[in-house]
Image (cartoon, rainbow, N blue to C red; front, side):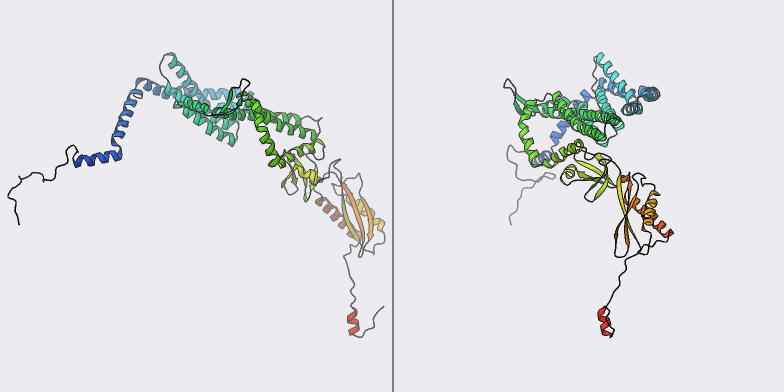
Length: 477
């Protein structure tokens, strides 16, 4: 074995191959890989930039003043809010008419303190602007508080879960974008996203942007709500006019239901500047859709107008459609609501009344005749007395009319009984027909038994000839 006589000094690092010239040591290579993996340098740089931005924009006297204003505004709001609520509740709300205005006044009284806070903050914004000082933070608070007040007002005044959700999902995002100062950029991006829909008279292209679409939806929603309020008011006024017939009132209500949404849509398109000449492009598609997929809906729609115009049925009529018997409670754009004695409401399509027919028990008048058949024994001698007794018994039932008077006819000499048909009239078929027929038959049962008149049941005499032959008995002719 060969030995090395050269010795290394004590404490010296172990010798090894030297790294190539120009490359960092392995320790530095390991540290650089970890930093590159974690992005430490970029994270450090961003943290430094954020701290510098915070020190320059947040840790300033203007921000401190605005924050102090936000907290200080709570004091006058807490002082004047209850006074404002007392003023609205005691002076304004009692004088407001019932309905929408009364609910609006009560809603203002309910959120009087936030309204006082909004007034205080808006005053602070005006004051800071007059002094030439920034008010970005206070304006953000005003935007968020305004959004909350609008949503709360919609919830308290309209009392509709749908409109409450719409207000929540529309107003809050707008307020948040405005509070962070990016609402203007979002509006510009929506306006830039547009599609061509035609050309004007000067051959200039006409575009319809996403911002126009959103504006149309918002304006249409507001106008549709306003149209529904006006529609409800007009229906109430029409229903109060006694000179109009029920059918004509239903016709006017149906016309209002159709016209008010159309007018709201046309006005909304006009307000946003939509060119109506371009609607001709979609007329073919709309006609094709009606011809293929909407023909049943359109048929029901126009059948409803036909039913009301020719007065074949109207609200309150007692009708029978196939196996459904009841009275008409409502005539909608697509169907007629028929309420039965069981409390169930059948929604019968309008065209069914025209195609399949309907039995209207109260078309000309509400007087309806019922039948109560019965029979008596052949032992009964005075059949005319039975006829008179049945007619007098029918008059004892409350719902049976005295004019036209009940009439009892002898209809046949049956196999087991002499059969009569008691006919009587009622004027309220909507209250049921089986129950009044049952009441008449029960009263007739009692009266017949009081006079000893027998109601027979079928009897059969069975003659078995084969048995007589087997027993040797003589057969009878």
